[in-house]
Image (cartoon, rainbow, N blue to C red):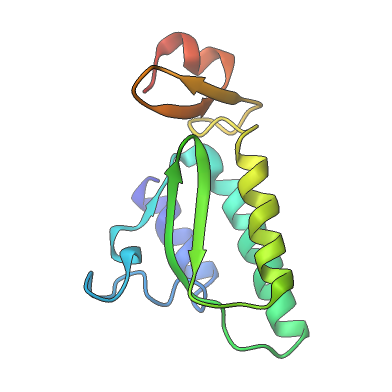
Length: 129
């Protein structure tokens, strides 16, 4: 994700991204949000849902340990959380398989033979992988 969008999410959700600039010996968040800009809204909505649930239910903070793409889908790892939080994450990860990682439009998993990435028709044609 481009640095401006990465920073925007970290500033909007400081508890979730508390480890964003921590030592790589303790978290993979030091590498940033390792996804395309097209998933910005998906991650923003997920973080909003998580933070709202945590606040409303007086739960301990949820801290992301890694956010990346794997096998064409979003992976949003946390240290620990309430079962409802895990459900929110699972739903967002499933949604990612239908959202172009480059632009955020409707997409599907594209198999380039060496890498899976969820792309819209336009970005499959451009071969952004």
